[in-house]
Image (cartoon, rainbow, N blue to C red; front, top):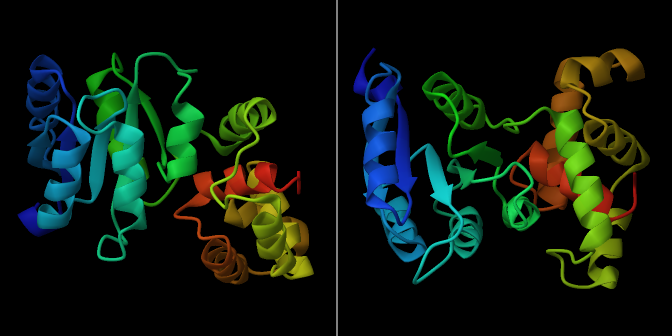
Length: 226
């Protein structure tokens, strides 16, 4: 495999042992290349802009600038449209998981995950998919939205305006996405082609300023569509 075909990864963690450990682990996979290492969120932003990695492995709790703020900055940067962030957590229900998803992260990975699981998670996120199963994502997001109803759109009025911009078909498809349905499953249920579903999903992402399906699920629950 040529270097151009490899998944380019930026590792971000404030602990040197963790950073070096991930680098050693990922170097054993022929389709993955570690292109940079950062020890805090500020360095992560700078290196993301300089290196344009495919995936950023982002720790959450770091000095100087935390991983959530760094994730929000990277995802919002128009010069980094194809960068996906995978947050690193100690527990699968880390209190910051929802904040990370709301900021634009594509999912989360436990720090003690097996090497093969780490590599596979990077591949999944690189494809633009949510790391964890959509149905599990929906359950987590539903619980967290209920407990912390703030929205990245700021106000309920702004959120309502975005919802009103969606067509009936787009709302229908968004609800199915939030329930964990794949494009093929949605196509079968609505008796339309997968390509048509893909087009609708792309338009919904644009209207809701969502980076990937994970953010669509967050939006669907924040707006009360599901």
